[in-house]
Structure formats: structure tokens, C-alpha cells
Length: 269
Image 1 (spheres, rainbow, N blue to C red):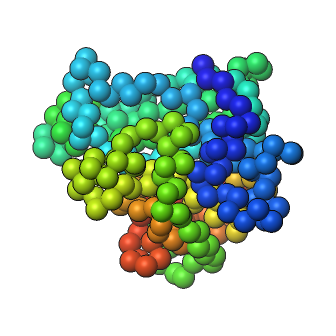
Image 2 (cartoon, rainbow, N blue to C red):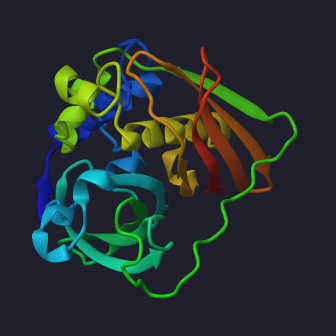
């Protein structure tokens, strides 16, 4: 069970880069308490269990676990403040074989505490790189959503600030690889990296802007795969193909052209 206030809602939106222009009224509604609304991907940071991968009873080599895929389905708007229940479960373990790692699939229902109504359901896949041969359920990993080879119908450029990870982490992800240069260097990065869920939220910003007319309630679901890291300060170009309500999308770093989020699929009303 987790309570949150309008301060948490504003802080989350600031972590996604909203509010850089205080005269932009479209963005002000996410970062000012007057007529405040939540950005829907805030549900991703609510109701999280402790980092149970590191519990020795799991047998997981948690240091070598990476986030591979992320998805979320929205059922109703998240209030600007309130109390929610996060109901978490492991829904699948896909063993890729000895030396090839395993996929751990988790689902989380975000439920309004007062009414019992389902707000959102998130699904994530983590890659346990050192845990192949664990047995698993026998399931086969689903094929990624294909991205069209035609030019995108829409593209939106969104700039990240060099200090953005220091703001985003205040919404609950305290992993030092996003803040401590020494930890980032030991992990093989030239400097702290941006949170994957921040990149995911930026993709949602682009979808709402380009395809929903700014109406967050029209974004019904989104999912995809993380392909590489983002450094704070990078500009992300989110490319979209609208195919009658089902949207394919990906994100790349503008300067290097590296795809950082791929095989994206979204549903827009």
C-alpha cells in the first residue's frame, strides 16, 4: 500500500521534463497544483515491492539482472493524490538455457485503495543474465513487435537535461548508477545514465502529444523493449507509425542515431 500527494505527482512530471517553459500551459497542468492532472505513466512508480531479486532465497544473481521489456495498460486516470495498492506477481520464468540467462516476467496491478478499482496493470521482463538452466515454466519468449520499414508518420524530439536523472530518481528509483559517477564507471558507463522508465515516460509524452491531441486519457496501453542506455542531456527522437489505432514506435538518440527503445506498440483511442 502506498500513499502519494500532489507533490509526488508534480515531482514525477518534472522528472519527465515537463515544465521547462513555465508559459507552456499544456505542460503546466502536470506541474502546478491548480487543476493538476497526473501523467499516466506515473502508475509505473507506484506500488513497487522491495528489490526482492537480491533476497538470497531467490537464488538470482541480482547484480547481473537487466531490465529488458516494459509495458503498461491504463484502465482509468490516476488521481493527483491518493492511496493505491500494488499487487505484484511473477507471471512467468522463461529459461533460455545454461549460459544464456533467464527471463523473469512480473505483473503489477495498481488498484485504488478507496474504491478497489483497477487503475493500471504493468508488465515487465527482466533478463537474469547468469541464471540460465534454472528450469523455468517451459514458456517460449514472445516475438518482438515488428517496426515498419517505411518512413514514420510522426516524429517528436524531446530533449533531456544533464541533471534529469537526479530529479527522476526522487520518484523512487535510487539505483546509484543514475547518480554516482564512480558507480556508473564501474558499470561500464562514462557517466550516470538515465532511468529506463524515464525513457519510457518520454516515449509516452511523444505519443500523447502527436497522436492524442494532448489528451492523456486516449493513451490506452504501450509496451516495448529497451535496447541501450540514454545519457542525461541526450535528445530523444520518438518515431511513430499510426496504423488505425495501433501504433508502432521506437526512440533513438538524435546525435548518434542509436535506437534506445525498440519494438514499441501502443493503443490509442
